[in-house]
Image 1 (cartoon, rainbow, N blue to C red):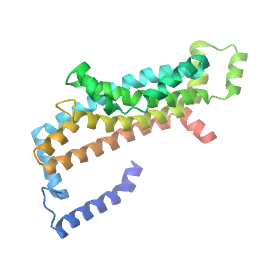
Image 2 (image 1 turned 90 degrees about the vertical axis):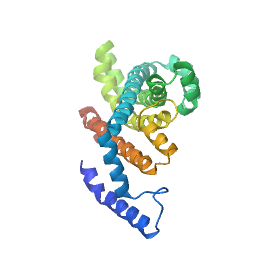
Image 3 (image 1 turned 45 degrees about the vertical axis):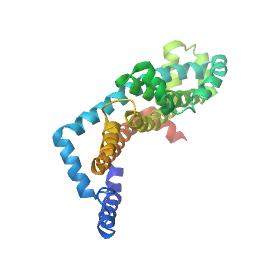
Image 4 (image 1 turned 135 degrees about the horizontal axis):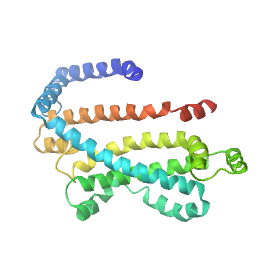
Length: 251
């Protein structure tokens, strides 16, 4: 919240320069509508229910795709971080698939799952899985050998070993991966909705563009930015977990 308050003057300055530029250069609203026109468009979308409906659709897809990816990636990442042979065996495949843009999978996603929520969730899963997996592996591999030896001397294994040794030490990297990846997932869902579904903020933007309604295009972009900022602030709360704070302080 403190960062939002600090950044408020910058947002107000951008809005002022935007409105001044539109008025001074007499820019056609069909090319670039001013901020007051966009605000009016947002209000109309809100009153019509479209804004809520499309926002909820996007958040629903991101939530499911992201949570499924996080659950599987963290579990697999912990396993691979602790097991050298499986890690070396799977690393080439992981690094082969990771650079492929999730958007490149859109034709296959539509072919396999049709048009609807499932292909969009699948694309979000792909966008989220590999970054979280690699952050988790690196976090587990960064556990100090001293901690591992102490756990061995105490004959600590199974769930207690994971709960009291591995997870606290790896958590900062995992949290960083979760936060960074959520931003990527939010980017991908907007692009995916422009091609793979008939609802969501991405669909709202592309539909407005097709009808040459630039006011709604920019209004959709504004909502994407606001929700993205909100999601990032929610994920930032994870940084206040005691284990994360402790390790960052030690650094």
